Length: 52
Image 1 (tube, helix red, strand yellow):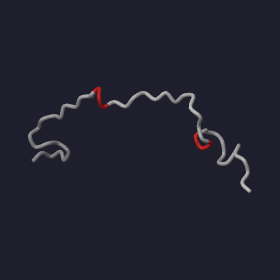
Image 2 (cartoon, one colour):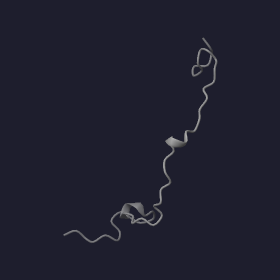
Image 3 (tube, helix red, strand yellow):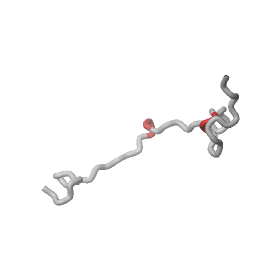
Image 4 (cartoon, one colour):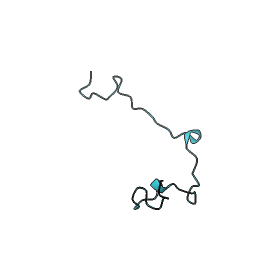
């Protein structure tokens, strides 16, 4: 066994490939309506109607 704990016993390196089909689609959400908690810099509840 090797002294390295994360290396395979046969000594071969794993070959990784980026499959085009496994990529996530680009999101077009620049102009989407965001919730109050999505706006950085504002306090929680700021700009919301009061309850009651």
